[in-house]
Length: 431
Image (cartoon, rainbow, N blue to C red; front, side, top):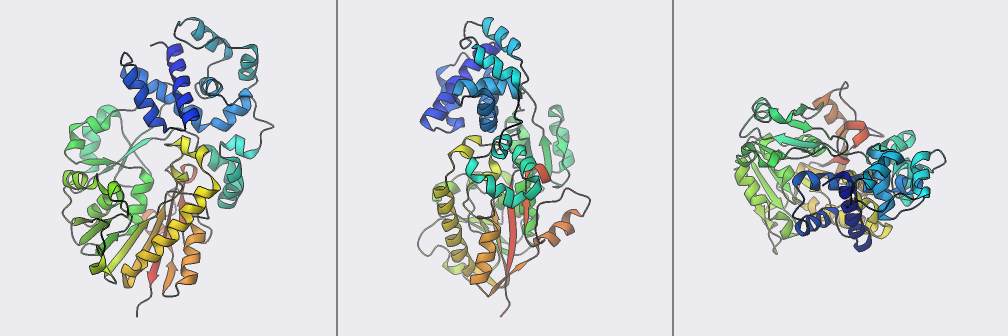
């Protein structure tokens, strides 16, 4: 396919995503099934156009004066892929499968390329109703932080120290040119490219099938390290999901002690069994949400990890369509679910043990406000300094997360080069 045909395909996928509110990955997969003539390079390029269009949806719509799928796709080609109006007109004219020619208004909008008069939420490509939340969370850096969420993310892997080493995996994947990162010592990164750049298929490598590494954003690796699970400890991963943090903690613990992986949604736990086996994890077991499934753990856990359900604002680079679907009602529902999860999880912490609260969100309502509300209503728990743990692990010369008082930390694409994550620790006062 020529670029003009790829552009038309991206418009069709965006029509599915925008019109039917479908997840991007699902719409792209269906397009590929119905257009089997398209090669892997074509599918990758089409996906890049679609994701770029959605990451910068607000600013592209502002510049184009139109928020239709066509306008968003043209905006991505013009402002993310750096094609001029003349270049776009030429590639459309050169391809019978391309969309209709540019109108005079579209060409003029592309040529103008100005956001000078746009409000902060447009420049930052965030929902208008969340502008205040970003200003609250990031203060004078709010615009820079918002803009970072509209950039392409890298692909990160966590090297599994139970089976291999960073040096060995780096050599195994050397043809893909992995990079070391500044924080996690177990991370190798494959930076995002521009235009039709295609990320390497690292999950197709034999080293992945052998369990030498897992695909995991560096931010998730970092918060797994901040949990600081000790060898021989008893740990409950209360909202384990697919098990990414369970796997990382097992490696930290060198397969000693015990991790109990649990989730209220049994379907989310489904991938964990195969992942544990492939990674060589022997100190983890799953607990399905049956009545009384965790009764024997009450008051016994050294650490209880609540990777709480949240809005996922920290993952906007990877799932940009969710950014524009998020509503206040959804945020309110997540806040309620988080409070319930904390209220339930607290009972498993032993006196002197720790309750760890994590989200992949950067909104204070889901983060700082939740933990301060919890400790205010649970006097047997006190907040301990996550910032000090950060400094112990990474020092002052490394990238620093957001923290208003050093008690909690927030990772973000602009500050730490990772997805957005919130981390906090509460100690159950000894009896």
